[in-house]
Amino acid sequence: VVNVVCNRDHVSLAVDGVFGVGEMMPEELCSPIVRLSMPRKSSMVVFAVSDVDSAAQTCLDKAFSGYGKTSVSIGRVLVQQPVYDRFCKLLRERLPCLVVGSPLDGCVDVGCTSDEAGVRQLEGLIAENGHLEKIVSERKGSAMPCTAMFGVQPSSTLWTNQPLGPLLCVAPFRTAKEATSLLNHSPRNSGV
Image (cartoon, rainbow, N blue to C red; front, side, top):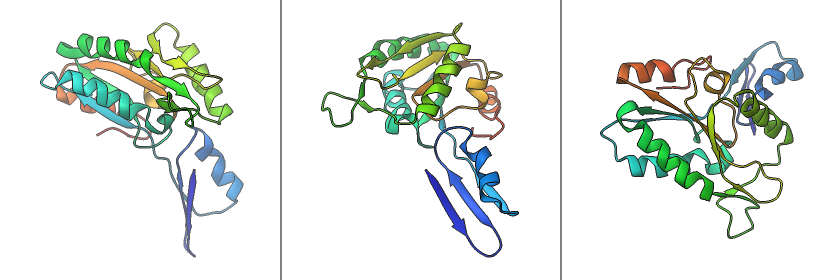
């Protein structure tokens, strides 16, 4: 999705879609004055004092709403170490129960994407990080399943360039200061 606002002084673009689209657009426009806005997926922080059960369900609901392709979808979750294992256990139990497929099917929880390039990019990132533990939802048809990856390092491409799509990255943290630093460890500073 691309929103374009033009006036005599500048062109402003808001791109909500596959990672990489924004980098191609200025060349295509051939405009000398372009301001590019690339919304990214949101982040979530779960502290040890949180209701972990509710946090896990909210995380699943928000991570895959809009098939994870909107800037309000959760893409990165930091969980404080005392509740990290419990939170991950709840995700492991619940994520496989999500059904991905046609939004016209009443049994489907998450609609599918028609963006083949985005699917290939996400599958490539998941394959590159095959050493990480992951859990995958049920799949109907050719839709890409929802995937959660655990123990993602803040230095990884998965963390720093969170792509739009049905992918959730989960990592532990110790202190609130560390969580803020980890969330802001991104070229787009899409943290808190």
